[in-house]
Amino acid sequence: MTPAVPTRYAIVQGRKDYLRLLEHVQAYLPANYTAAKLEDGTILIQGKDDHGWTLDGYVIPRLGSGLIPARETSAVDAAIVSISNGINPG
Image (cartoon, rainbow, N blue to C red; front, side, top):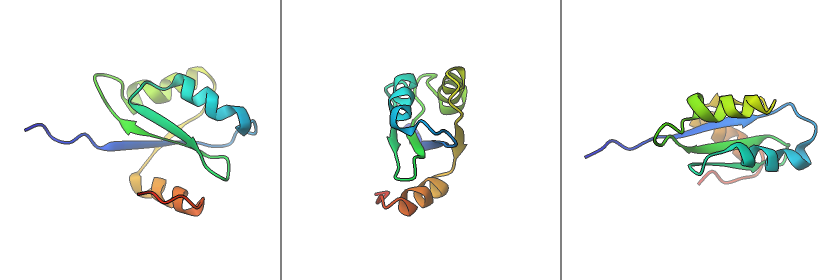
């Protein structure tokens, strides 16, 4: 039995062009990661590492190549960000 792959999270903050930023972030993500824009403009990225498409080895560096700063965050921090924006984390 293979171990479950944990869901990983990252956030993008500090940009003023939030109306277009979500589309840009989504264009940089592999199929195993998704992004959503929260009410405060923060972009929350979540997904599971798969076949080398990892958060720290691919997603964050790829976003950085497009001058989109992202940082990994814990599931607890992601839930707090979601709740503070009125989103039920599940």
